Length: 293
Image 1 (cartoon, helix red, strand yellow):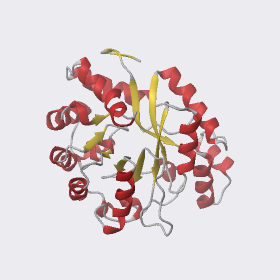
Image 2 (cartoon, rainbow, N blue to C red):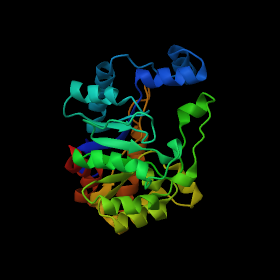
Image 3 (cartoon, one colour):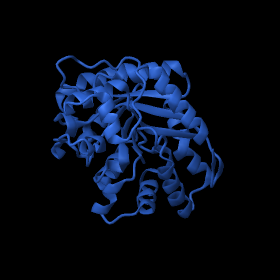
Image 4 (tube, rainbow, N blue to C red):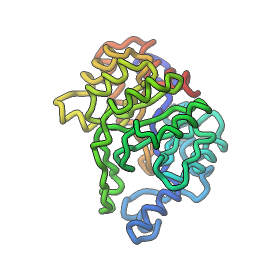
């Protein structure tokens, strides 16, 4: 992709793979059909075959010039959707999946490039003993562990009038400190710069070289601290350097597709900071490629 630093191999570390099962689960909660949910949202209803949705994303990312994308199955139990997408288009996708370590049936992480934990959503501390078997599995197969911290909002649920009873007691990035020290062979990703716990996310990443931050979404949490995106990037770069920052958009649905506006905002912020071409290429693609590509 052409960027202000020349041609750059862009890899997106944060895209939600909203599959047909995801829509059907929302529909069941809302007491409507999946078609009605899609119509209410103004979104395309994804095909039942994950390989077809993968092809839709490939066509979109080809237009935008994105070479690699981490696709997140956005509900527990939907990991087969992203695994099938990855298998259908080798080399284009990484398979991430939300898991709930408190589920009655222990979650499987086999084949996943990353397991995604949402402690505030499922009500546990990330350092709880109940989560340890998941870390052991992830370490055995060298998966990333993605841990959502800070403010958690699910826009699609709000649009549909569905409750989102997330408990922020479980959202502090510092809860991950002891875990990251205990599993130095695991790499951890905290998305959205900590989503309101920016200071804590920086402290964690500064102390733990196996913790990465992703840049995804509009980062609306910045209003809590009176920050702008340039300041956030500058402080992150000053604290942990360019090798542990992963570019992401938080793209999710069609017809919007890949959220070019987020990419544009982030390139502008980094350009205004005077970031070097080498460092920009690390953030926008090489770091994720090095970890999992």
